[in-house]
Length: 523
Image (tube, rainbow, N blue to C red):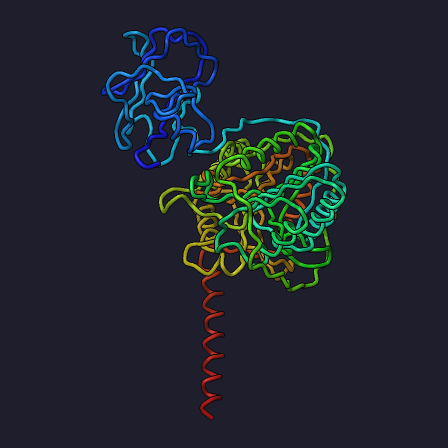
């Protein structure tokens, strides 16, 4: 808010507050006599402003603004500067802790600074973002699937079996066929809530507005995460793709709910991975995420005005992979930005092999590697065999710094250092795929990441993303067979020149055609 009246300080711990003072060198406050800390205590500058930003009132305020918020006795004027300031915690005259910026932390608009262990800001935490903890779920059953081969039947079965509830969160939803399955579930009494991204790249497509209208007209509640009059969305994009069914099943995928992500068997589409897992504890974890993301002031009802139904182009496809059963798997959820560091740690733990299939990989800057990619390269330096397969759809290879250049960079690095590292761009025509939309990793032939997390800066740090790391050899082998099928269809590029030659060849053909047309018209 303007003037930062919603700024706040959090103390975590237990015990009495006798003699505790919080100050910034210009002002400060004590706690009312007899105050006991019981875990997490929020002290805001202005309780009413804090409520407007966060949707709940703080435990205390140091400016009197609301009769229901207890005041702390203030001395001087405590107002935290954005560019440079400090906070000190005293008990009587003994300094217990202090934080200064810049120095201990680097200030950023809207960032919440927090200490975990002895470390400040293990991740970037912005206002409104969640802080879900890591969790593990052993002995999980379910189904693994790949797109375009068998994604739709798994989705169809999951929705048709729903009896009580469906919580659906997806970045884009344009498939009317999938929407009609959701409508049918609602008509048989299933309580359905849909959450969408309110501002996807390029805007909400007309096809999605048609889906929203179909769902809304049939009594399905459709929400979107957006910037509202009073709230800024806590995430750059709500890019997750998952469903929770009946509080006991979770479907997680790399694919949006579109025709190319979930085509019927025998129709081409994107290469993507997914799982549908059964466990009440795991489902409860994702229910909590869904509830948190739907509970803020950044949520509004989605509008289906101006919708036009999709008329997709269908290309035949020979199915190679059927769904397979997942048995007795160890599952760790990966939530961005909360626990996306688990992806890097997964790569750092590799001892034998890493297979990476991504829509694209971008580095942090010209001089700084993507941290996930950096972990994979470091793994190759300690002898781990690393393969990287990237998409070659036109918009991922047309620029001067995209997938083909990344492939060239990795292969040149491997040749220069003698690393067991190889990268390829997928041959989409050879495998009859529309594009590689996957965001998957397989480590040591036993653990697999299925997720919506792209390998760029925003996705793990600023987007809402979800995924799971599944440790179970047969499940990993299933996804590895799909990876190998895509890998073997691709050609090796030993430098960054190969795709440039292809671009030049295409350009030459286009110029030749234009010349022929010009000469023909001159006749």
